[in-house]
Image 1 (tube, rainbow, N blue to C red):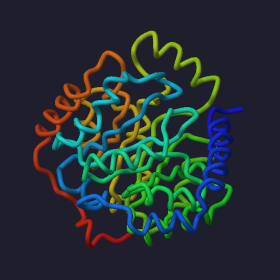
Image 2: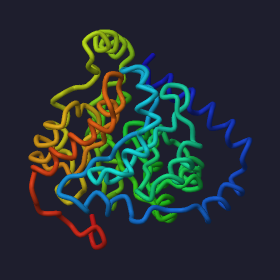
Image 3: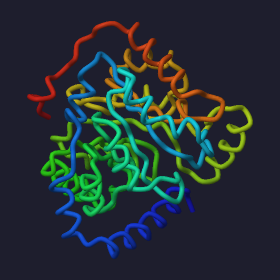
Length: 301
């Protein structure tokens, strides 16, 4: 039994409880009037030569508890720092100590685009994200291989609601990268690579060692380079997980990534979120002006 199986089981149970508490009809009403960011998620990623999607999470199965002080200061810090183009809010409850309400709270505190990061399997969760102020959702391709039509349905709904979708290639589940790639809609414009593994025995062993040495060892360091080739050149490429230090962004930019989603490095115990994000911002400035690629307003698949 893998960790991802445990997460999905708990996620489905939570989802059914939320559906019972808030009917879809009411959720749609809330979504119709929910506030938005000042620009789209993808446009924000293309506003700079390289962008940071800074994450708010309280814990993770591999890295353990984040520093509560960093979590409390994260939104204010991210909103004030120009290096942060968008903000990821982790809403999974059982394994990341998130809540869907954290999206609404974040929407009240920033005009920057918000990404709902969760294990999204159902259209209700997309409506839920928009109703709570999200501008984008993350879809893990590996979760949908057994229902290859579902990614398109979720993508179409999000697009209809005026949201962007970050499709993630990764090592969650038993599917191959080729299988994951084949079910991503052709007109999806934002693709990500997650270098984290979710195999229970390996993850638990790496997590225990990682906490001792102060580093998350559930990351496959070469995955960003190896999987970058799976992302078409016309897409906006995002590196997720495994970004430990400001110097890492140079290697990612050279590989052709447009942005990096960073969480643990900013929030972990022993770090000061304002100092770390400042260091990332300073490093990004040294990358220099590069081609901004496709115009987000005109880009096609």
